[in-house]
Length: 384
Image 1 (cartoon, rainbow, N blue to C red):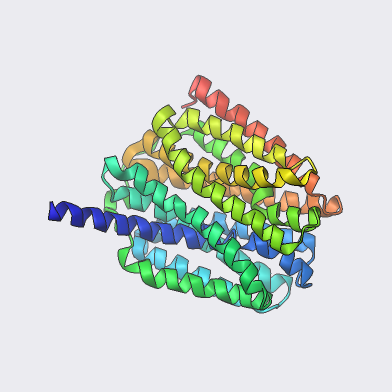
Image 2 (cartoon, rainbow, N blue to C red; image 1 turned 120 degrees about the vertical axis):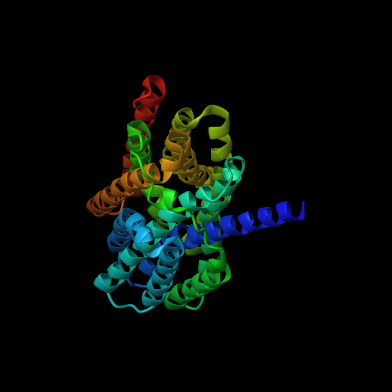
């Protein structure tokens, strides 16, 4: 009994280390920028279109990180690769504290994206690889809880830190990253070699890959412009913009829990289709100008954003077993490519429409409905 409890404690700590990785790489390195977006514009660091460009550069970095992290982990080990991701995130936060111009900020936001891709690409599959099958759903939920927890943490911290200026906000995020890194690095997962360099060929999973990629493209508007929609688009100010991001984080936490349950109940293909419906509803809620719509918009956007990731991770494991890491890197890369392209396209659209949030969110809705059609077709005809 004592040995069983000790093993359970060890597995929980490993899962929590994955929570710290996703909290940093996605919750903070990517998403803490969203409540900072309107503050940086207000402080004169960038204009609205340039702020959107910085978000797109972060998404591009994510693609680089997730594309190269598997080879890096095979070369230096999973724990060292995770250490590198955390160090890069901390350095990027600290560097952004200096107002060095658009090129300077763009470089470091891209590096933050690389760290996010590395941490997200490794944490989920590595934790699941060292967890017994009966505990993988819980472990996966804990890992992805880090995204929602990081979003909520950033949304609560950023307004407080901004009272000392934009520079202090960036430095505070660097300090939080350092604390998380030092606390959890002794518990990094150490998956077997068969999981980091598996033999055999993973199934193509075309439907999962396409639906998840199009979902990523459609989610760019809430992931980049949600706080700015409330702060500048609806004239509610930076504080209310950060409040929207708290709602998004709470929705993400719910999405991590409900997404795993959806897969257990319905299977991955049907669960992805359900989540594309939820995502389409979220994007549609951004179009009316009534202020009360902002509350469900924030919550449902978060539910959609993290729920689809939970569903896709579980579907990859369901589809490929020990080769799930291969599929996960593949679908995550597709997600990252789609988000990067969408990020640049929407930044251009934002500039071309005189910073129209309605145009950006309408484009996201169109993409989300396209993803719903793909998910339905995969569920109906089971493409490979």
